[in-house]
Image (tube, rainbow, N blue to C red):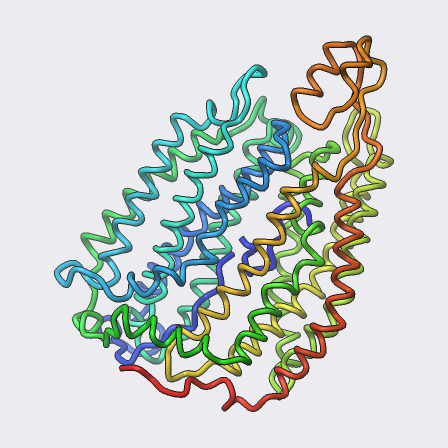
Length: 519
């Protein structure tokens, strides 16, 4: 729903990536000391690296909001949504990152340093052209293809950096403190996404800066923000390269190689039960696709300021932290997917609730075009309730993954499951964005050339309608059609999906184990 593309942390979607459950045999700490003190500098470094990783993700999350204000088509939004896919498919090149490295540079730094230098370089390059690419001036159209390509590369590099940092965290921290790795990932990446999304959209908004900061205009521009972080990426990467050394033990880690890793993946995929689970993961989010991908964009189209939508995510953050902790108490037993089964139909219903919010939003608009505080309070209240069902599903699935993953193959099992989870959210969202325009019925009213200008389906037709003295009217918005149809599909899916889920979680853990390990 609103603001942050709402990704349920699975992308998040995304877009937020899921942390692979890596494993390593040899752990080494830094220097002497005891407890947390000896790893304090390493924990701070990991936090910094994950914050940097979250910046391009947050910026990518803000671009659909900016594009919507530039009146791009939903087909263009579908095209840009492809830029979020690298975190969903990083399993394809993760074995390469783990297997190929320069011993003189370090196993993880061999990928971390080039990836971060390239991220900084892309940001600096983009800072010079982003205004033109976004269609600066009324006579220009955003170049969505180029923007998508650049942000796809940024997210690809961030995903590569994520693979390297996840692996380095396991050897950078001592054995007793290795549990801090996931905390650094969650906190750092969330902070980075917050800076790149919420903070940027707020400070880039002239209206926000005038009303809340007393400024005469916006404090930052997208080009300036990209330039600042591009320079910071280069500086921090240079410092890490020169001053932070990998312990020799991390260079001695067991390396299964590309063939061994892909062999393990093949053994996992040979299981029929695994394909039943994969089918569930790839189809279970079809019913939510329209509400997840389109609701925030529709609110912006109606006139809700994008910076206000971004700021609505702030009160949600504590809930997103505390809810999983509470729900986890109900997933520790033999039936971890019960919260998923409970939350699924309720989340489907909220797709209709969000459609209702979009429908009544124009009624709340004041004479000056703004919206009252109680309107934003309504959105927050609805979104908070929605988050309960989102987290029921997310925590249940993650607990089930942890239960069935074969520890003998390290993080490969969990990463494979997370890959299909993320893909199951990405492809329905792309379809919803791609076809919503085709399902929208419009016409041109009052045109002097009514015989030649009858539709407003494309930007060209809208322009012709206005030039002929007419105005475009929407008779049926494809958003509502998609929402209702996909919610119905979701309830029909339950007839097969929920019994399948119950059957899968009733299977003994041994049914999920890899039968033979290839060393």
